[in-house]
Length: 69
Ligand SMILES: [Cu+2]
Image (cartoon, rainbow, N blue to C red; front, side, top):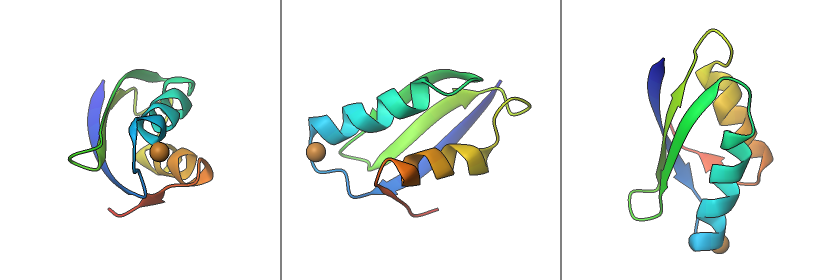
């Protein structure tokens, strides 16, 4: 299990936080997701063999938010 922190731009409310969280939690290989509006980031525990950091970032982008790292 790997912990990855991804900086996200464009989240403005709890609804956005939930959207990002839901999208990430649905992905295979993702164990735990913690999304913070204040810190503008998602902390994700995932199996790096099943899902890469790039795939996590792509999922966030597809949901309509900008990844800044
Ligand atoms: Cu929102």
